[in-house]
Length: 177
Image (cartoon, rainbow, N blue to C red; front, top):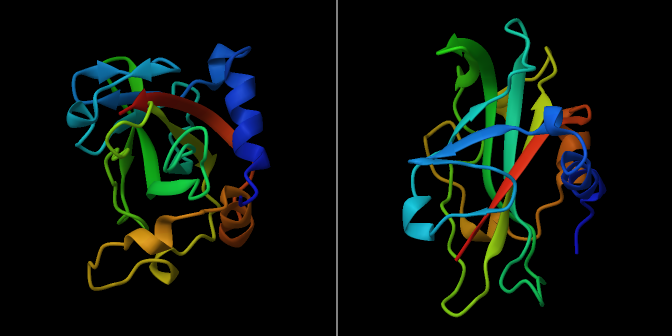
């Protein structure tokens, strides 16, 4: 299984430090850590917010499924579900909503556990984006979507290193099947 030490540490930290919870909205659902959302209700790209966001800083969010294809046998995990760079905080209704100013590196892929599988954990990790980050190096340029094979066994630790990301600043997760 690929190395995801930082992801596991962030998930553990959110249990004790509520200031590290990333606001995630999936359709009509406001995600609290561990909330169950039926997969049919998690089809649309999420809206993220972080009240600790600096309006002059860009952020990047990564979403992973840690339990594919089955929580008791996750040999395909983690599966990448989304990488969105260029998120900037905008004050909307008293909250700091993060809006994208750049194209996604990996388009949002909704939950898709196989039939009969127990719920999977869909985890969101927010990083500050380096000022020198150039997303065009990582996008297809022609609008092509990332294929399934490229998403399997994704190493967040390796991606953090390659993209020059610092520590995870906020996280959240929901479950779905």
